[in-house]
Length: 435
Image 1: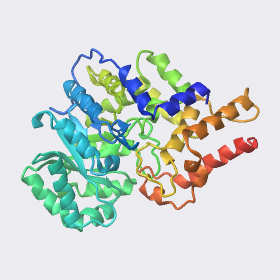
Image 2: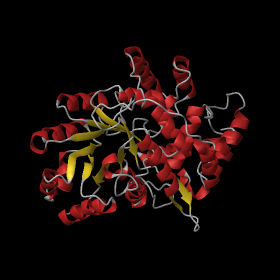
Image 3: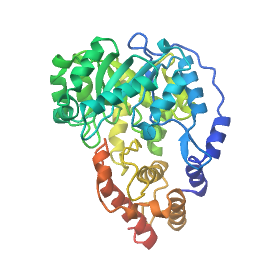
Image 4: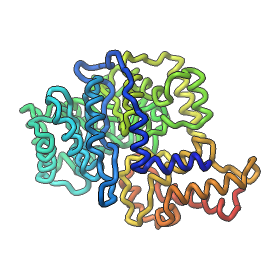
C-alpha cells in the first residue's frame, strides 16, 4: 500500500476526516420516482447498524446524532422510508439514535423494522421486555416489521423462540395490530431454511430477510445458503423478501481493480456499488434492499440508482455472475464488517485487520513475491501502513484461538485461522521469507 493510500485508510476513521468528508459533500439535485415493488415501501432501505460516529469529550466513539438526523431527513425526502435496526446494534445504541431521528417526523411517514435479538439462553420475560423496550424507545404502539433475529435452523428457532412461549405472544401482538408484519432473518444451511419454510403454514411469515447479492447467488460464505435457492423458495410462497448485505459488507463497492475495470468499461458513469444494487433491485419479490449508508455520498449514490430505476438486462446479469466466479480466485477474507465478533477479549481489531488485508488485495498493492517489480519498496510500505492502521497490541499475532469470535460470526468465517494466515503473511514480509 502506497503512503498516500495508507494515509487515506488511516484518516478515514478520524473525526477530522469525517468533517472533511461531510464538508465536501453537496446535496445533489436528485429527481425521479423511488422503485417500489410493494406499495408504500421504497426498495432502498436504511440499515441502521453503521450510523456515523464521532469522538466525544472523553475520547470515546459515539453516534453523531446531528449527522444521523441529516441523513434520515434526506432519505425520507427522497422516498427511503424503511429503517432496519436492532437492540444490539452499535453497542445497543442504534435504536435510540434511529428513534431520535425518526420521531422528528410523523409516524405514518416511516416504517420501523427492528428485531427480537435474543441469543443463547432466552426467557419469555426477557423476550417480552426487549420487545416492550423497542416500543418505548420509538414512542409507538406498533412495529411495522418485527424480526426474529438471525435464525440458523429449526432447533435454533425452537430453543430461542418457540419453547419459551414467546411465539404465542408475538402472534397475539400481530393479531392486535401491534406487530404489522412478523418475519425472521436467516443465516444458515439449506436444511435449516427448509425447516423454517415448513413452519410457514403455522406462522404465516409476512416477510423473510436473507443475504443476497451477485456473489452469494452461487458462491455463499460459510454456513450461508446459496441465494439462488433462497429466493425461488420464498418467491413461490409469495413471501416478500428483505435483502441484507447487497454489497457484502462493502466488498462489492470496492472490488479488485481488474474487476472494476470490466464494470467501468460497460458503464463508465455508474459507481461500482450501483451494479450490486441494480442486481438485487431487479428481482420483483424484493421488498427492500438494506444499505448501511454511513455518509451522505453513500445515500446519494444509492438514490441515483433507485430513482427511476434501470433493471439489469440478461447480459448484465451474466456479466455479474461471471465476475462473482472471478472473485472466488482472490484470497479475500469474506468479512462483511458486521462487528458481531467484537469486542475481542484480547483486544484484537478483527474487522480492521481483515479490512486492511482485503483493501490491499483489491487495490493491487498486495505484496505477492520477491520477484515482483519494486518488491523492497512495496514491502516497506506495506509493513509501515499495517503498523499505522492496526496498533501493535491489536494485531493478528495476539490471537490465541479462543474461537469466541467464531461462534458470533454470521458468515461462519474461521476467524482465528484467517488471522493466523494473515499473521504468517506479515511475518514472511518481516523476515523476507516470502516466496
